[in-house]
Image (tube, rainbow over all chains, first blue to last red; front, side, top):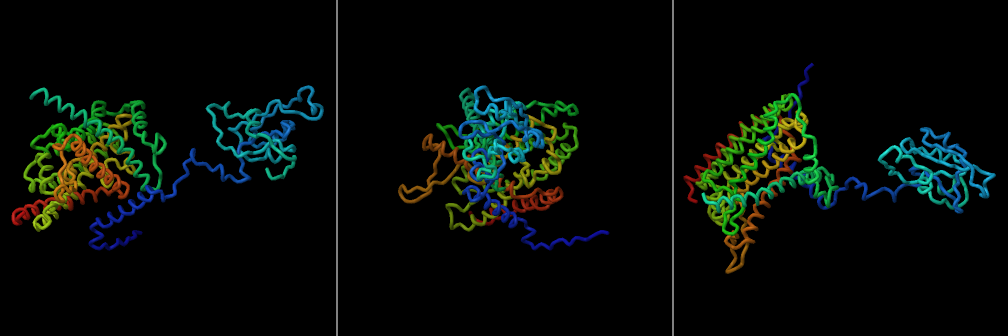
Length: 176
Length: 363
């Protein structure tokens, strides 16, 4: 069924268009001047402005390995994170501590610890499952690389991102 | 025809062309920035300070892209069309006086006595670039764009020609330098009462001149395919219109040709209605009066005139862009109705109005 749409009855000055065009131009010019004088809020200019200072404590960035105060790698290569990791991004090659180390007969040690950042989904399960509080999700988020190999974080890189974790090994401390 | 004249002409061309091409490049940048500001965005600000090197990056991109020719096009006309879009627009600038004098040399490349007629003759050729591009692309969207372009240009060319006749009636000459000279002596065409404030006839004359100016500006918008009249391009309906099948520098020529046409159109508006290179400067030497600064006062004054001319063009270019980002596109029947029923008639009546005023009112 055909519907007759009522057309608006325009007055003569509306039919002239020119006043409305002038009004439209005035609106756009107002936007223009507001922008010129910096009174318009615009998108954050990314590389110069970042959210870094405003990231919440619970922010989940790249996973990283931490050392304790005495410089020892906290990870004992129990491989729980490797098993829990949903996208299977973590690959650990466990090994023994070098001869003469005080903890040699007690604990294992990760010879290799690779996290494939292409696969990682930043879920934080590795952090939750870790019995030694050795792996943490830090606030770095700009992970880039030119090749797939670039995107794999090896042990050295993970330790560099992680840094040193002070304080007692408590799972639910304030760094959590 | 002596060698000095040829040499001076070449020097003027070599001086003017880089300036115009520079303005063209930066008008692309200005267009992007102004559109961004109007839409509450920052716009291109990455390449160089404030993104000022963006045009150079764009040019490098255009030149380095693969120059691809589709298999289904008519090769000869496909290659010819971008040149035809670019050249007439630049050619028109030859007769426009862009400054007073510099070292005693008049700042106009070719001061020919048919002036504006030459401008119209060459500007009409601009449509061939678009029509040939649309036809030779052998594809439906460019074809529609070409057809639209030809009918649109025909419709508005009439108004364009008729809108300047009142100016000729007042000035009595076609030579563009004479028109500028007349405006310096009798006030700009847009304000013929300037300097003779008590003369009622001149105030009367301001009305047809204003109508003429508005009609001419609208027609220039249509001639340069700028937004309220950009039906040949009409991105939302015709993909890219006449340049859908074009890429790399051939597209670049169409794109920049549009901006050159804008600059040329602005130059003609400035010359005919806004006093060309003239700007009255207040002076207090021996009582207050408006001083005339032209090339007879030295090189700096000559350069000042050239600067004024391009500054006026820049203001008009801003207006072009401002309108583009404010108004929606006309529907095709609206465009035709506006062109044939309103603009054309108004321009026609305006001629008679001017003639009557000139005949019966003492100026």
